[in-house]
Image (cartoon, rainbow, N blue to C red):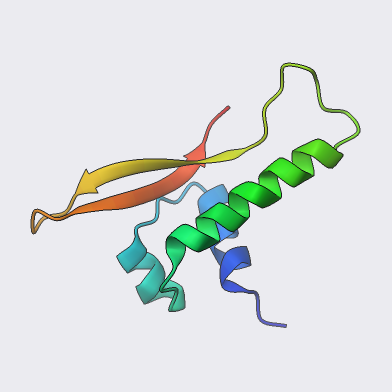
Length: 84
């Protein structure tokens, strides 16, 4: 069974990758990367809430957004997994 764009993006980020909208378009044909990132962050939060063993001071996984400048001078978002 083929994995969804969200599953592929989540796996890529969890493997230590950094992702821009252009890379997501080239890799998976994903035109709405920011929407997929939002969904992945929601999943992390819901998984954290359902975890029976979460500690009071623990935090859910989170996607970090950084604005970078490309070689052509354009500013774009770059996403990576935030290390807690």
